[in-house]
Length: 106
Image (cartoon, rainbow, N blue to C red; front, side):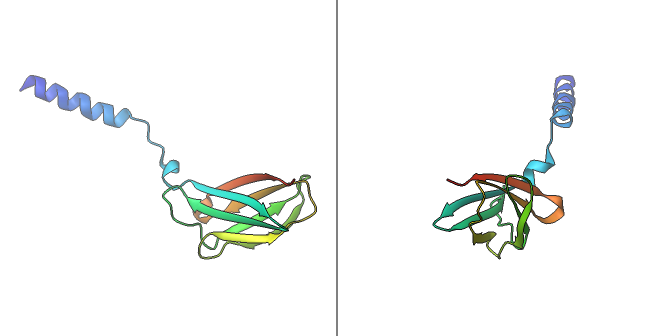
């Protein structure tokens, strides 16, 4: 009985000391690519859910805000390719979740 009790205490201690990172449960991602004269984005959470109706901001290579909008119900957003060699696309999803994607336009 004593060994079983020690095992239980050791197992409980191990579980309590295990690192838990709740942020990973709902991490958000944004991905962007260029097709022709348009930029397309897709935004989603790590669990596969789409980042629907989330704010998107697009900055030029100097940090100037070029445009802003919202993703659709599928987490998608597109816009006409601006005249900038690089873009920083920032997603602001629910509950303070943010993600960035740096896009080099060739």
